[in-house]
Image 1 (cartoon, rainbow, N blue to C red):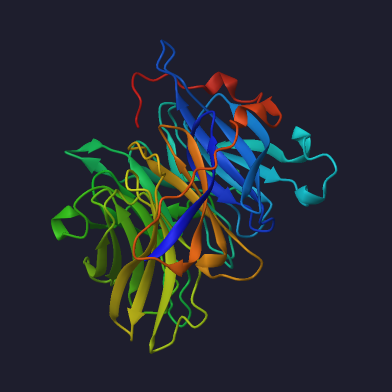
Image 2: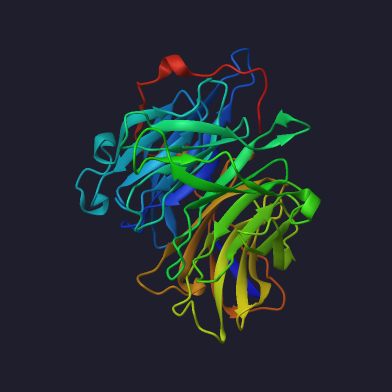
Length: 430
């Protein structure tokens, strides 16, 4: 196993929920946060925090505070300066990251970094949280954003259409009671196959659901979710606990190939024939913690190589830290998963690792040339770490390099819109 090294540990002000690196400014990333106030108000609040990661050291550049929490954050594949974020009040926010931040002479000016333009309402009730979102893949003729919600529903947001959301479809439930849907993903277009547009969702009910995407009633080229769907749930033994991470692969195969992560602590490779309601588990690996998030670090240069392919994946494993695994296809049909490296805070005290990201050095995509950022939810920590270039049979103890709290750095501004839509709830969902 490869050895990892901690470079920096930072104390955060609020609990981190999501991380996204800028696609065209490799040193810049944004963290979305979530705080539940346990006082009489029982409100959720959050921040968008802009950081710079330079030579393994994190610098906070700006904080924008909101009267709602941020649960997910994604950059647009079409406009790399634009991003969307999921909120705890049933809305999707839209923002823009300033271009050429590192060339700016005034990076400490809040107006020079983030601009929040508008908020799209996707849920009828303010007690519904938007839990995840996903842009249509690059190259699709019509941009749209799929979202999941805490009431178990899924919808498609069409930013260019006045109606925005054509319909919501209730999907995930336990004992006929709605339960959280946690993740949504689009299946990439598969050339040489005349495949329909498709979504997958996962939730607390341990179900992996496949959704056909149709033209909505609002008009042509406006997407909606069809009522018909296929459930691959615990009765078919694909997952035995909640499904919280889904990554459809780009492979040209007659079946749809997915990576999934679950509370049951397994990462899996699934092969799904759209015509047969069955998820075939091609490979699985126990990672010793709930597999909350999966991010592919490098796509293979020859995805159709009949001899096989392999690619590394970053997994956030809740109480088991972060792991880098290698997913490998042997020939055309056999798969395997191997753990390459593992990171956990040397002062580990059972925190939850939810949000992680990675910075690519130049155009070199080897994991030893990447810098990783991982966060822990309850103790509000951010860690910068790397994979060392040499293997080690045993992991040596690493010396902590803790910097001052981020509370001392960076300007802060408060978002002025939507204050009348702050949610009051009776209990925290997390």
